[in-house]
Image (cartoon, rainbow, N blue to C red):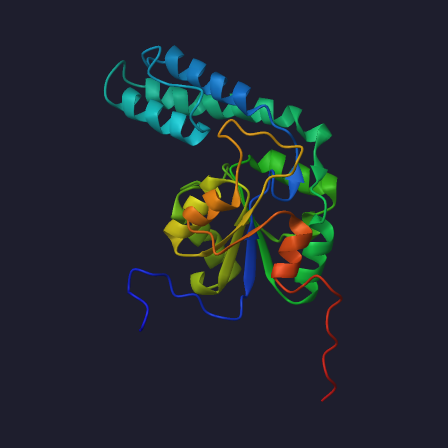
Length: 250
């Protein structure tokens, strides 16, 4: 039976792999609780009714809810003041994590193997441009990524599917020949809405999440095509765990 039109059509071989950054390729242990609390504080400063926002939601949902309320009433200009201030607060907290950021185990061998086999590699992250480039430079992973899209870029941000589609267009990769890898349900949401193949990566043992433990079952329910417990297992799933095969002489 042919696939239904509502199902994504993935083609082989893969041409490119896009990675989430924090938690997937690097470990920085951001203070996300403090970030969420700061966004709520700034939103209430500019007119959101106290108690309407909760620090139990992801940052992008807190921001969306604040935008809706501020756009619906209150002094003119408060929405723009909120939009100008909250990113600076997040950026400052994020920057504090940069000195302790390290590569996730297995990241460099995986990226080296993918690069040697000709895959185009990119990063799509909700981190700032400053943090993303600093983290990639600090961990030595920067040379693998000529393509990078952060929350500092103009236009939609993850989990908007357009954020991933814009990056793939820049990479010259058709959506159906791409793979997105991430450690959070936001990553799964972004990929599945963009109709791009998604592999879930279980969080590193050192990571904690306010959203509860991530499991293979949660990833699969969110549309993941596969789930890896760590980056070495992801390398095996992508068949790049061993040395690159020599090209036969013509």
